[in-house]
Image (cartoon, rainbow, N blue to C red; front, side, top):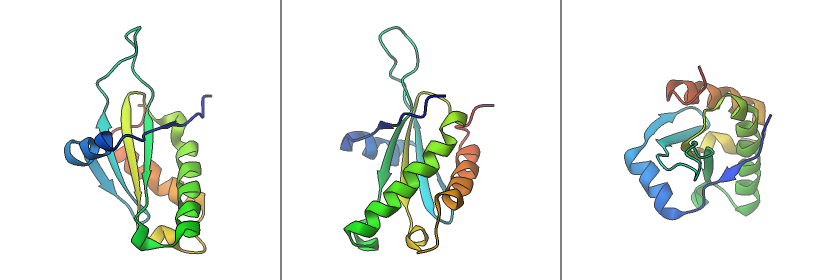
Length: 122
């Protein structure tokens, strides 16, 4: 099972996913999904790329880093069920900054949201 994360770092792809992609919201995160129409040189779908957005108004640097780590681990738990060829942006909401929030809590909510956005394998 490949649990490698492929990061999404380019600003223009974030903007494109926000404007043209589908979105879903849960208690801890907002998820934006856009189908990546680019392919590899051999014609196969590209890997699904993940971008994590955490607003600076929600907490200091240490808290934001903790939330990013938790979201990344929750995504890793779902990665086996996600199809290839998508751009996924997960934006943290204020509820994810709670002291008792664990990656399993976010993972359950994230899995449901990704299912609603039709990103999971059938």
